[in-house]
Amino acid sequence: MATVIEGLPPGPRMPMPLQTLAMLQRQRPFLERQRRRFGPIFSLKMASLGNMVVLSDPALIKQTFTADARTLHAGDQSPLRRILGRNSLLGIDEGQHLEQRRLLLPPFKGQRMKSYEALIEEIAVAEIDTWQAGVEFPTGPSMQRITLRAILRAVFGATGARLQQLEELLPPWTEQGSALTRFPQLHHDLGPRSPWGRFVRLRARVDAILDSLIEDARRDPELTERSDILALMVQATHGDGSPMTNPEIRDQLVTMLAAGHETTAHTLSWAVERLRRHPEVLARLVEEADEGGRSLRDATIREVQRMRPVIAFAGRHTMVPFEIGGYRLPVGVLIGLSAGLTHYDPALFPHPDRFDPDRFLDVLPDTYSWIPFGGGIRRCIGATFAHIEVDVVLRVLLQRVELLPTSAPDERWRFRGVAWAPAGGGMAAVRRRVAAAPRAFVAAAA
Ligand code: HEM
Image 1: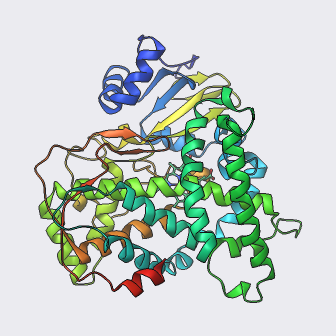
Image 2: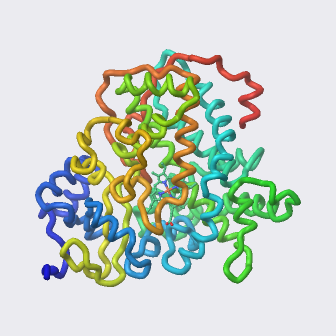
Image 3: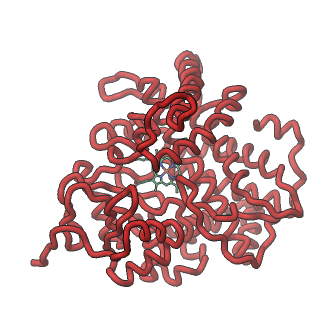
């Protein structure tokens, strides 16, 4: 019988601040070095996270993603619970998590998601038509506007003045929230000028708008005809038949915004960054879009997410001793399932440094080797929404502008509080292919 070692697997001896710095500034080479030295399971020490056991082998990943919900938690140990609210899907575990996920999953099912395509297209056309030909610019802010508006309209069901107010309030709120995640010692309301005081007052203003959207939906005689996710949440019922409460709906709405806005925007900026450096793929994509196809675009999105996963780790905390990879980890250890390392394993993805969408052409990626959306019972609830959104925005981009190739070096990775973005913002240079939409159409999309 194989022996099991009690405690943590080995890891680098460097002091914690140096390990943290290496993870922030040179994550992939640092992690690759540790994998070469220690294998697919090793320990790191990270400021504010403590001991983290890093996994990058599909069998170990599968074992962790499929472990019992009482053995490994992902929510209640997370600083996001205080930031997003006590009902947030990202901050709860076990029975409470299962119950909320049961309420939220049906709206995110495939067929319904398809119905958002026209809305996303309208939003993307309005934004991409503002792009200036002949100058180089970062696509980041534009992609963020698209993904924010897509969530506010498709998920929150917001339109008109309330859409505009949320578009003003939510970006500073998420920015403050992601900064505060790293400083729990600041989570005290010392008045409206203190960081936490400012944050909770902003949330109160957001909540007032969300309450008015929820109340309108509860009174809407055509509620059952509506396709936005807020309307579906208003109709969802707990196991005992009671409806979701306003605080529950509000916490889940801001959770979806926090989880789905920047992640999708950065993925789009990375797609621009990759495609400008691979003109042969770009040319095939344009041809396919013009002919009404989408297989290569699907594969390209998956390849962008393999090479540039914007969330580096899915995290789980051990609630009881957990046996994995020959070690029995004690209670209270953070396990980090590393998308970056797994996606660059040559045994799983030959020539991992090569941008090669063909590896996913008409082939679905493996559940435990391709993990940009995490996995198991915590797998990203918005994965289909995100894929459809990236697909539609890319199609609109390919059809309306010519993306000009570049010989500039690859953009580096930069951590932007929630997710990893291209350091230059995904720089683009374009020529127009299709005349910009008339102003009336752009205004209607707003
Ligand atoms: C490219 C875009 C996105 C990426 C890369 C991404 C990635 C992730 C990852 C890695 C997780 C953690 C999974 C785990 O722990 O196993 C997650 C969870 C989650 N995501 Fe996404 N996400 C994206 C878009 C979205 C969108 C658009 C939404 C909603 C509209 C969303 C909502 C959520 C929620 C609610 C969770 C928590 C699930 C739970 O704990 O049960 N995400 N996402």
